[in-house]
Length: 223
Length: 223
DNA sequence: TAGATTGTTAATCGATTAACAATC
DNA sequence: TAGATTGTTAATCGATTAACAATC
Image (cartoon, rainbow over the protein chains, first blue to last red):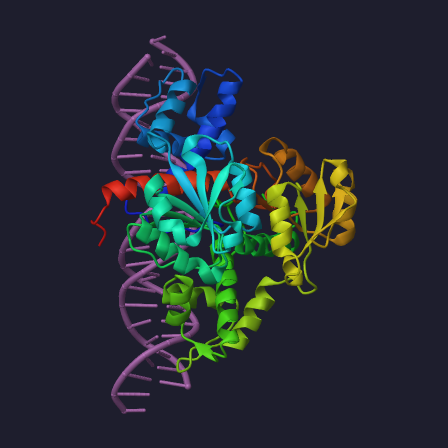
């Protein structure tokens, strides 16, 4: 359940976009093993998705498979890349340089350009004007100018819940249209801003709940 | 899309459990402000959910509101607590003491007992036998015995994707029935093990995609 | 060809929302 | 009482899956 989403206006569902991202990683593993082509049911098995779902999702990227050989791995990867990635690469901002923020900066350091965190912000002026994991840090006061200069469209929020709405409003004003919110707070945003939530506390409580109830109620009854 | 879920066998949906966790935090804010009661539409507004959804979700915890005063905040909180939390508190294991793992240990240190990370594991023996943020670390070889001794039912996976399946299998064998998987890999688990996924890379790619397409396609057309 | 897979539509499934009698 | 809200059912909505003609 983690990761609840806002309603999508576009014709392409957020779920499809997410699965395309997943397929891409599976396909990258295949290409590393020199696998030339895959069938929808093979790709589906690796991604934990039905074959019909895979075929449906792949239709949106406009790549057509063959009924004899399935999907050509390198060509499909290129189609997904064209569909998902911004042409010149897309920088992402991170707001809130706490422990989680730093962990994310470390994780995404040196990744491909469309997922690079290119600027980080924090209210604490002591954290500004430093470089963490190759990423320049700025005080909150420079957010509007930096976001605008670097053409940043997407941002990750790792601030306390109490700050989330204020920061999100400032980001939207600065031109950000996609937000990944780790703060445990719902954001009220204009319709054109896409918001995705990752709520770790909720996810933890959910697995704890089902771990407990499944273990007692469904012990041995799974079919 | 972040956070894809396994099919749930239980009558209570994972989405409902997740929202109950969210309502609880909203209600805690209300109780801090000495608000005695709320209506479903008020709670819904704060949680980003419709009033009908709130009423439906609250039915499952067995607490009945009043048509004149709505829901009594302390009593409802107690009902949710009874429903969500394990009676004696529930320890959670964490596997993979990397940057993300450490950030999570820090975040959940000193929380209430049902969300406490009580044991951490890593393949690196150098990381074992230490205490990080109040949590004892063990080598992977002791996982089965520690999980069994502490009665751990739920676990968080912050290992590399290549290790995820092996570790998950070991956890399931040790008695874990709920897993929160941060590794970008689908897990094939027996039916009685509940798995929830948080895939940060997929979430980032999704917000990047919609940030780009919304900004161009829907500029000013949102209604 | 025969056989398996693709693209795509129709049927299914499950969750959300609307609606309303009962309640205070 | 009149009016608003609750608990709960029926209608809606959207995503997934099943099915199958077309294809190689």
